[in-house]
Length: 258
Image (cartoon, rainbow, N blue to C red):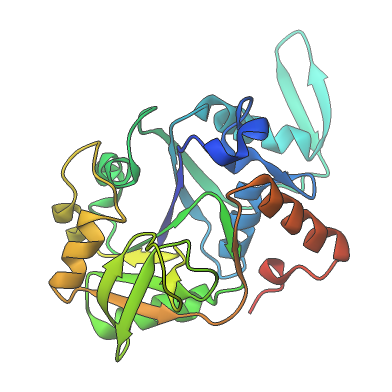
């Protein structure tokens, strides 16, 4: 079974009014954490084995999943022996591993700390805990398997404030995180990796989007899956409000399936 890593440990400083009391992946859209929305996207493609890389306020994410089944069910509690009977359970059939990867660890370091959980599992997927899309994850995985390289990044086309990609025949020929100017394809997350990618990670201070992806590009081991459709990250309160508006419209692109 393909494992899906979700990076959930960042501070989310541009969402400070929310993230002072909760980690960024727990900021809600439509009454559910953005993390839940991301996991539902993967579930639509039958990817239901998740490994969450926790950091800042990771206990809030642990508490959420520890109590998830109870929140979605009717309960009968036998106080004498502590037994709980669940009625009308509606929880998703997910396997969720919650791994503390350090409060101050950077993105590549968080992935490196997960090596013992992923190294023997073969191909795995990875995304950030703050972005949704209608990307076809099944097609993404098939594309990755077709080219035989170590890494695939999903390339999307929003504003130029994110990591820029220069592409040639499907291969990434230049990777630059958050360029100062320019337009075109950017790093939209939704990666697929082979375990050999761990050789490109050094320590807790490794930023995945810098040296590792740049070196993979240099080694001609990073391919791009072009996704011209919907993609939105939640970096700011304005982003959260925009996602909430989409949710309230009932026309929710990331929950439509493919």
